[in-house]
Structures are given as structure tokens and as C-alpha cells.
Image 1 (cartoon, rainbow, N blue to C red):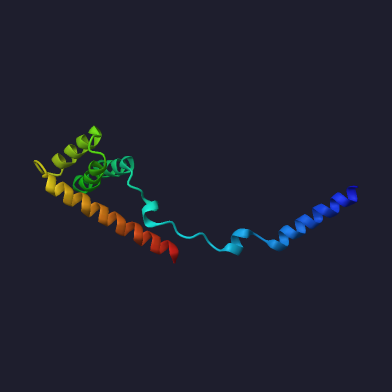
Image 2 (image 1 turned 90 degrees about the vertical axis):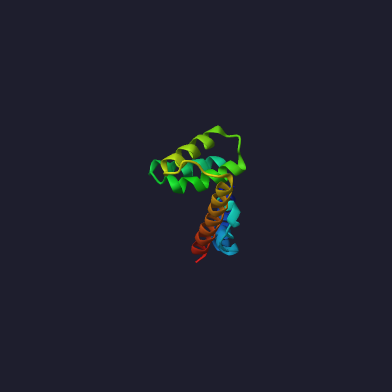
Length: 123
């Protein structure tokens, strides 16, 4: 009986070796869609803006904060961070229209950066 088991094990290992890795046979995975690479997560946007604020790039922090506020206007920490960024950037106040423009610019710049990164990964 041990000869039969050994033979079955040898045949199974041989078949596995002959068939190879199924990942190689099917090719590489397709790239995920651009939106899946960087979802519209308010927590991520807030962390992104916080990094700008910590590096004293207050004007750059306004874009992600404006976009995060479009997604979740009831989050108080976003308003506090926006107020800090606006004051430390040298402005006394910022209009709603300008916030909308900044959010749109940030969203478009983010989308372009993600698309560029996806293109670089595909080459």
C-alpha cells in the first residue's frame, strides 16, 4: 500500500509541476479602475490636509479640506482645520464660492495624479 501512496503522490506532484502556476497562465491582473485607487474617504482627505498643515503649507491644505467638507459638512474637525489653514495662509476669510472652486481643483488634480500613476504602473 505504501508503494501506491508514493506513486499517487509522485503523479500529483508531477501534474502540479507540468501544469505550472495558474497565475502565469492567465496573465497579470488587470489594473483597478482609477476611482478604486483613491476613494473619496473623508478621513484620508483630512489626514492629507493635516500633513500639509504640519509642513506649513497652509494654502495647499485648503483644497483637500474643501473637498472633505463637500462630502461631510457636519464634521467639526474639518471646519476647525479649515479655519486654521485659512488664518495661517494669510487670509482673513474665504468665500463659499472659492471653497467650491478649490474643492473642484483638488478633485481634478487628484484624478489626474491617479490616472498618471495608473499609466506609469501599466508600463
